[in-house]
Length: 197
Image (cartoon, rainbow, N blue to C red):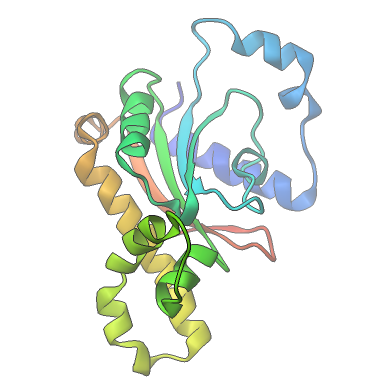
């Protein structure tokens, strides 16, 4: 298993491959599938990301089958099952790095800012995001709408990271031991670039 800095570098290098289109076909082929069915085959990283179909986590980090344990939800916010899944990744899969990945043009954050009526169970997701934006929404007059939206996306990503580090006991334990790092990042839908926050 790579160290946290090595795991981070693998994701950074992978994002560069994604940007240049230099994928490694072997990472998705039959041989890789066979390698990853071995009981000692573990992902080196985990990610909490948005369910948005435009955010293909493994691809944008240039990784293949078995490399990243991914938890996804609208607005990249984890409920108890998502948090338990990240604890699972920390305790049983021994990942070295957890990435909380926000992205530009996040529809869930936009809904949290605009506050329209919402159908079905959608409010439960949007309200979780909205709750973390109260302070920012109170300062809305200080920003242009696009600037407020961008700040809200970053703020929501940091809030999600805080939930992971405060509510996942196994994640915290491994962070204290120094063999797990939890970082926030932002994926730009237009450029494909991942920026580390």
